[in-house]
Image (tube, rainbow, N blue to C red; front, side, top):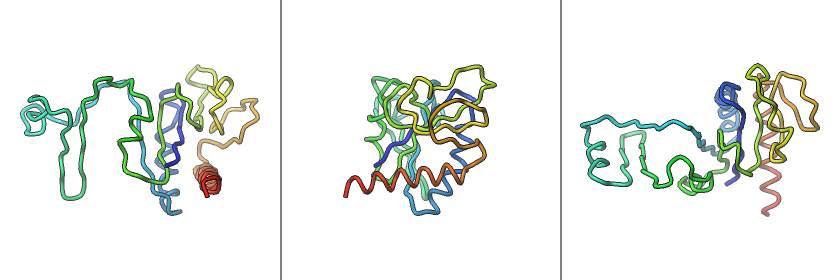
Length: 169
């Protein structure tokens, strides 16, 4: 599985970009998984429901299985600070894992940058950034895409996957 990060500050447009790129990758035959990092505690469960009661009773993992989807909640002792590799290991095999967030880890990544947020671009100090997605003029020697260029970003990712595939033949 090739892990590619999509990093940028909150509000930069990472999710909006992925919403447009993922269908293009899927149409090209890529089996995609996404891991979304958040600093907030998340919970889909509701107090009193059976799955909530199972967790409250001490189950570390609760999987709710429906006709078309399943949801797995796993209580992790290390909490939100688990490294990306821990989360990737929990996935079933696929072609591409897009990791939204995790900007402080060393995996290759694309940066979505919006200067209106008041931060400097990550790519100025982060050698793991492979390309910059921004409408701003940032003086970097990296492949560049406008924020609305989902086709270009998808082609770039497909080329990365092909290079990765060729390297493992």
